[in-house]
Image 1 (cartoon, rainbow, N blue to C red):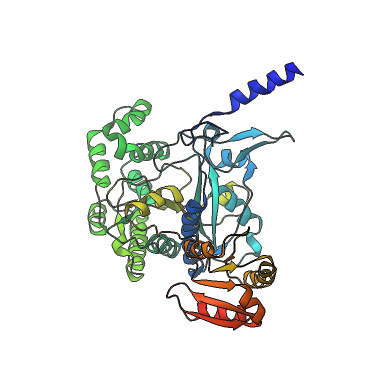
Image 2 (cartoon, rainbow, N blue to C red):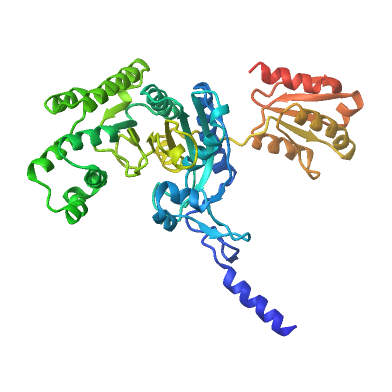
Length: 461
């Protein structure tokens, strides 16, 4: 027995530590990068989800859900073997290599691909789900996070980007954010491919150059070191033209730059740019969109327009990002199906809303508080409490007997707008006294009219 007690004590000493929140010893702490949502924090999170869901539904997108655990190979096939280092992956009890999902794109491509022939085009789906990445936690990035994902399948032209970018802008505007708070940087991997091809680069060099361009904003000239180690020094004229292309910020400047380059591919792609920007202007979101060829999004599966949303002050990570990925459904075993999608993370968006004072105070208040006399009155009140809750009104009462006078303070502290008073006199007369806690007015109603009276009160607000 003594030996078993010793083991228990050792185990306890390993599993508890001194908490910064309490004077004594505390139990387990949450893991690094994983968040806890106490009721007030959960209310704020639900507010974000509610706004996302309302906007996506207004745009005609249908919500779906998917497993949190997927075969590891699904992510390797999309992103390569190196992705495993960033995942929470393991071998399950059935001997399968699996991973907690780090993103939704491979999953939604698998799901759509499996039933593509039965789905009406265009396929417009969205999800709100939690994801996991084994990365160092830092400002704006956690190991567990939520994202809003929206994807449109089956439309090969810029019409899909018009719809998706408009949805992205509205998903942020719905919180009260304006063009002074955020903007969307719009670029095009296809345009880069065609331009670098016109400058004489082959496919391998183009991909290496795009990798350098993706790093240029943070690394500057050092971004080209990898390219030069692989292919040798970049010709000064080529680098100058690449750097000049990076600086383009308007459609007019883009047209002027490409005027002397020529080629059918570039001409066709410019027509797509014109259609996209005209559509965004007609949608009323052009002021939120900035042509910016410095964005190429390093994920190689993107095949066309790409875009990212940032706060105007440049204080935070990207709020959202996405683009076209026409080849991924087929790569994961489905049919050839063009696709565009984006994701918004809840962590960075939450930081932005807090910084702009746009996260509303989430009041956890009840609708009705019942002030109850003795035991007989308590039993009589229970029928009304149950009926009110069944009608959808948040109704509370003191679980244990409390002095009658003190209950009015409890009612006020609860945030309720109505108090229902069950005293001996009311019980004897078969009535309930209804007090409006906003103006202190009172009236008596028959017991069988309590639910009706409460309903009428809140309907008239």
